[in-house]
Amino acid sequence: MTVIQALLIAAICLLLILYYKSFKNQAIKRLLFLFVFALGLVFVLFPELTNHIANLLGIGRGADLLLYFSVIGGFLALILIYSKFKELERSVAELVRRQAILHAKIPADGTDVTSKEQPRDRFASGEKNSQKT
Amino acid sequence: MNENIYVIVPCFNETGVIRKTLIALLDKGYRVIVVDDGSKPDLFLEIEDLPIHYLRHEINLGQGAALQTGMDYSLERGAKIVVHFDADGQHRAEDIPVLVAPIVENMADVALGSRFLSETDAAAVPIVRRLVLKAARLINLLFTGMWLTDAHNGLRVLNRKALEKIKITESRMAHATEIIRLIKTNDLRCCERATHVVYTPYSRKKGQTILNAVNILFDLILNRFR
Image: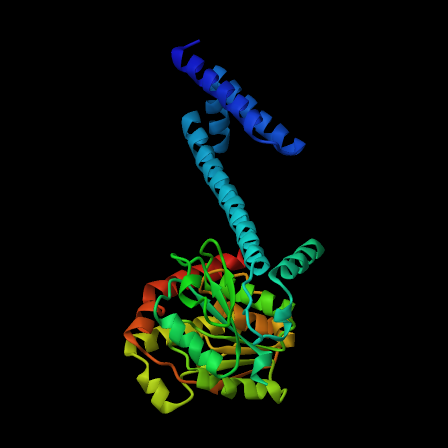
């Protein structure tokens, strides 16, 4: 085993541990990731294998094959993270908007018909609504 | 009768001008809902003596979100008619009845203000702004299929039905186009009425720039693929 192989195997193992420590995913996703990690290990241990596959696909070198797929994988990951981020942004916005309605300040004087109710009542009614949805 | 009309004024760091805008609305007897979109410092200190409904987003979400918060709130309070009104002083409180009339007469569900329906008002629009708005009009047509004379006039009046149907999801400025799309998809009746737009150095600074128009376009396209 060469030095680079040892290093890469260590890196893959570390990534695997990090992945399982920080994410709780569905079984299918986990199996898929396990497969990718295993594939990585196999390619590190038997580099000639990538050359064979590359040749079958019409690519000159195995390293190129890995490069192409890792670029695609990288962008895929980026897009998934972006959509997750957008989702988070939407739920924060929803939270902030609910909060604003819940803590609305109402005119103190009689300029408003429904202003007889106290802010606390508003809080209660707001809560009811949020449970409904 | 004006007390059944809720005017939603979204604001973000509108120091100084906001007070004048609000007083003009309150003088006409409208109920005013101010949605402070995370201004710093808190806008409430400046206007707490006015009889307004004050809602505050703790973080800045954008004008679309502020409008939707105001609409949710007025829906909850049983509003029959709701007005969208800009805080920067470019809309005039006197124009609201012009837009409310077709709603009250049940001729439309949504009435939109337009600065291009009268010659003199159209001429008052600065030339660069006019070009930007022309482009926006085209974008509206592409995204909504509706050919309106004024694409981004913030002055709108909605009845209860429209209020229940229109849910803005575009947090930022693309909501203007989104509203038009929602009018179309929900089969709401819509009309345009001539309103004036007051161009002050302040409102010009706050208004849409060409770069902003590009942002809006991107928001619209991205939203399609969500």
